[in-house]
Length: 383
Image (tube, rainbow, N blue to C red; front, side, top):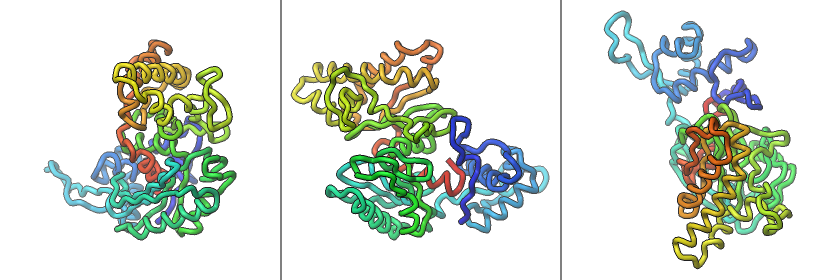
């Protein structure tokens, strides 16, 4: 299967993941291919004529592209379009989303790696998990390699690639710049796994992967933030349909913004980081032994702290919504309500209108879904 390089692979706020218009001639064919697949993926079966109208491509170009995609087995003809009585009946073409599969791996949990074989539409066909047993460094890379191989062998359709959501700072090539808890530094993880697995492998930060998953499969807004709350706290940010990378690929490190003066010691070595009050273990300690009313007040206090930390980000980027991914018993109640109220109070009314702070749609599968989108976007130009 070909691997197009389209405008969807460009970095920066102006480069949307979703292809929507024509580009320079040297990139046109790959980009136009992505345009067709993108439309079929999101809109469903379409006639060639309607594809031409939707993409602003000529009918000749569409006919050529569809023929190539038919030969590759990525699309199929589905019969006559209903409801047309005048002229030659239009044949619908649709994307064969069940013909290929993606292997996705979630490394966000310190204790266990989770994986799935997924359809192109994000449904898990096979699930696996494997205890990490304290392995770090090269040993963990070896364990991940073996785990990915078991998932690939469990696939029931050809696998187009492997996606990995990893903690730490990860650059655009899938190199883990730094993941202290995994003892990975300047590790070309995507390249290593691509060589070992003989398949395209794409690696991104787990919170960034979560944002991609919610954007593609969860119906999230084009400009939004996904806050992942577990052993640590991370964030993935999308603006105008593009994942925000940052100067050193570390955009979204909200967990290590100082929110409490002289607060508790954080794993990063500083004191008072958001992670020290919002991570799941910290929240559970905060409510341990409290009656429901006192627990709600403790969680509301953390929510107000979270809202204060989020306000500059939401205001500066004009985000439409913030999604919380983590334990609902801790997040989806007094904490979320207080965070939204504080966030609204601390942002300009014009930007706060319609602002939503809600739980993530994909729940515990959010990183797996995002890892699948990494492959989907890189291999097919679809997101």
